[in-house]
Image (cartoon, rainbow, N blue to C red; front, side, top):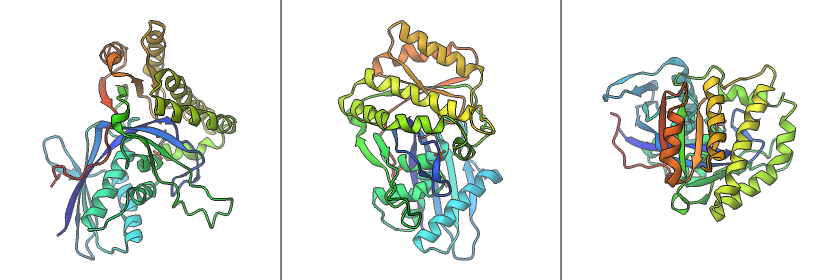
Length: 341
Ligand code: PMV
């Protein structure tokens, strides 16, 4: 039976995807820009099963053991396998195992890395060759918009791919990730303070859905074209002083929208607020550090390499921080990795 293993990284968005014109296909209202990570990765091994056999969804444990995935996870994987079957004209089932190098569902984009790795492993196991753009569209079809960005390394933009107001024309084929700069272009670090390691109570899918009810949704959309321009330019010019403030503003606005949605969504906990305060203290002391968050309580602090050790030390001392993950910009998905079975 044909088998393949792929590894794909998580990413952290500088300009966030929050709110969709089509949630099922994760077609965003606004472009997003992220940095692909190096160490926070998902690995997925996929075996093509004979026609008629049901999908098996497994999780890889720390000591190499495989166990059945919980139903909620297995359902999302099966749903994406259905999409991939439809897109590739395949009928058979798949045996899938996934393993993350970081805690699942806690504000590190495990759906992004997981669906990117799964998409790449399935298409490779089927012996199909897709371009990076096509793989990015397929990964986005999982319903995780950020998965489209995890298909590409370095600094990445996901455009809306919107073409006019006719929903018939808006098939999403133009919303695929584009590399703004490779990982070698600029060595940025992401120090992640983990304050919550269980799965979050409200999924990002539900957060996207509710976001449109926030009175601040429209205001942020109006600010975005300038933010996107600054982020693109600061990446091109490697200007951390230009990039940092926009990154932090964006994260606060995402959570402002979440908190003012109906019903409201609160992802933060007391440690999140303590960390945001520490990051402001660090800046007051002259250490360039800017915070960002995804749909979760954990805080990602973006910085340049020389400040990373001190920032990690200071974040670790904040009450409520369970562990620190030190990551950096990375090169994107990989195929030559060890299989999970
Ligand atoms: O990829 P999704 O559908 O889980 O949405 C991602 C949402 C954020 O992580 C909050 C923002 C982003 O652009 O990554």
